[in-house]
Length: 312
Image (cartoon, rainbow, N blue to C red; front, top):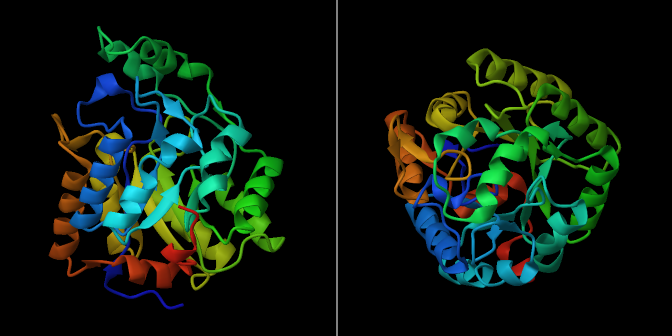
């Protein structure tokens, strides 16, 4: 399907699994907070909501489907946004645990990391003298030993398991090699156009946040996939979030914002909410005569099954 020339899909990643409660008061933890933040982000203009679950008692990552079910129905009832569940969960989870929520709820979309990688946030540990919860300091500081595992076998398992439910993927590519992994599964027929590539920059362990890398990733994807077979988006960690999103939109791509990716709204100032980040990127898009895609336009562009075919 032809992409709409002036339409940009805004994804919003609401809470993630790497930032911890001490790092921002705005980071949603409870199901009620996650639902409220997601609904507000959709109202602000996000057409895709990328969602993780957290233990309501202490904000630690969880793959428990019962926790997902405490906020997914509310979001579905109050928005028409595409719900995109994680299969990444946390680097501390097994692939089976990471898939539990998605397998039970069968959403329109899931994220899918396209390879194994080191995934470190340990430099953040020195910024905080006190922590709200006991688990946080060790979790952050020990990430110098985190390997996010997604072997070829893991990826095939996720593709087949969720593909059987009609779920499509946000293929998360943290480095150039992940694009080649994606091409491997495309050649095998386990991925079919149109598919959605999320290019990720600035994570310690992945490709650096340099504009030259953005250009190279896009050129490589075009060469491997053909420009008509895929839609693409960009997220960048921390202070790189808005500059990279802006550049991606100007290049004809789509964008992702949210507190999973950056806790800031501008240098030196924490974001008050996910919706605040959506509002900011929407204002930037407007300056360049670009408009946020509606959920229905996003579904058409990505070939999704529709919100009436999920299991929640």
